[in-house]
Length: 331
Image 1 (cartoon, one colour):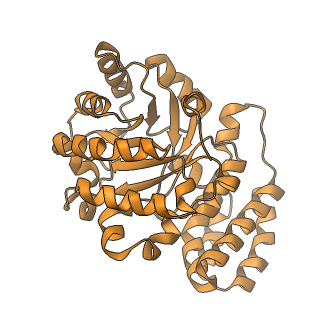
Image 2 (image 1 turned 135 degrees about the vertical axis):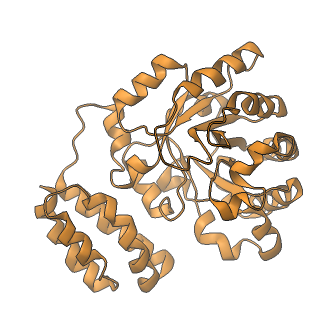
């Protein structure tokens, strides 16, 4: 799928890449639920360089016919690793259909940051710039957009997002997304939405006001989107945890009248599970689906019993017998 520059800039609602959750079947649900743009789970650029695409294919896999426009997200530190990995992706008939390559510069997980990747790149902006400059001609030549996702800063009280964003803009990135927490905060505390205005003002001052800026962090409703928009002229909103048990949040933001039925929830859960079994096999899919379904049933009366039951399910026959029992819970 080729997105024109105009289409690229019109996208407003994004699913955040979440390890262990934003797999292809779930991204399809979000697409049907109104998301404008999807992103794969993060994959190591160096892993692709040394092991090829096959070991990571389940995480890289896209299908823009059924999930809409999507980016493949990579993490790493070495610009040459990224270049070789992206070349391999572009040489693959399926993966090369992605709309964008997204560089993860915001993952706060220790094992990622210890390698200099993820949010650790915010401590070495010159390396982040080197990666963008290395990849931009390659992506542009293949008709792909190059995007980056990073954080407010690295240290607990740090706020370096504006300077970091400007450096990436000058290097030629096509779109940026900012999670309004620092890496050291992980996902605790409240997201600092004021950072979006700081970044936007910095970009405007230096002639990059047209660079799409996507807001991320604690966005749970249309009201949150309006609040952020009043604070800063962002181009769109990326939603992660709030979509885990509710892929319809994008439709709810677009249309306040939207209501999802209990029957559709059950049908969508079952479809997602069956697609995962096709991708991963019955046993692996059963184990991974246990954690995926938990946010769906959280907060309902008697949900504890359902969560306990889910923890014991593995086989396809067990899951298919379980899904109809959720009707009473969702009504």
